[in-house]
Image (cartoon, rainbow, N blue to C red; front, top):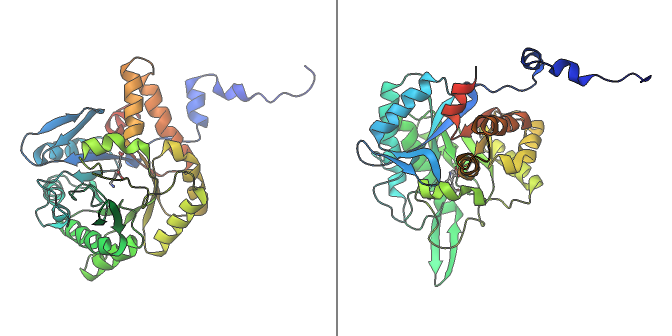
Length: 327
Ligand code: PBG
C-alpha cells in the first residue's frame, strides 16, 4: 500500500488503550433508580413484566434507598400506588399520601441521597388519566387547566414532605409555571423542577402501567403526550418548559428517541435527563432471560448510547446493576 492509511485500530488493541481514549463514560452518580411504593409492611411484590423490579412498602423502599446511596447512585425517583383512587387524585396530594410517607422515611434515615418525586395524576385517578376528565356519553376530554391546580398542590405537598426535586410527567400545558408558582408561594423557592418536557405517547410504557396500576380505563394518552413523529415539536415543548421555569429537562422514552436527546443536548444548556422506560427494560430482560442477549453487554451498551446521545442523567431500572459494574 503506497498511500497513507489512517490506522484507527492502533488505539483499540487492548483494554488499557481503549479505556484511555474512551469518549463517553458512565458513572453511578448519573443514574437514577425508580421505586414503586405501595401500602403495607414487608411488601416486596415482583412486577411480572419487569423482572427484578418490585412494588415496595415504605419499609422496603427505605432499604432500597440505603442501597442506592451505598452504590453511589445519583438519586431515586418515587412513584406511588395509593390505597384508593378517586376523581380528584386525593392520594397524590394528601399529607400522608404514600409518596409523602416514603419521602419522610427516606429523608429521615438516608443522608445526601437525592429524592425525586414523579408528579402525575394517573396513578391516583380512578380513570387512570394524567389529568381531570370531563365525560359525556362516550366522549371524553382531559381538561388542562383544572389539572394544573391539582398538580401544583401535589408538588407543594411533596416538597413539604422533603422531596429534593419535583418531576412532573403529566404533559398538561403550563404545568411547570403552575407548579413553580405553587412552590414559590408556599415558600419552597429552593425546590427545583425536572420537567418531563418531551414525553412521547409510547407503547414502551406498557409494563409501567402494570407496576403503577395506572392504565387508562378508556381511551389513551395521545391527546396530551407527544406524537412520536415530532422532533421539532419536542424542541418547542422543551423551550416552553424552560421558559416556564424548569431547572432540568427530560426526554422520554430514551432509546427510540436518541435523536431527540441529541438535538436537545445541542440546543439547550440545562441538565438533560433521559428515561430508559419500563418497556425498554422489559424487552432487554425478556431477551436476556431467553439467552438471546448477553445481559451485561446490552445493559451497558444501552445506557452508554443514551449518554453518548447527550443525556447527563439516566433514569433506569438497571441503575443498581449498572452501578455495580462501573469501576
Ligand atoms: C406517569 C408516568 C408514566 C411513566 C412515568 N411517569 C406512565 C405513562 O405516562 O403512561 C412511564 C415510566 C416507564 O414506563 O418506565 N404519567
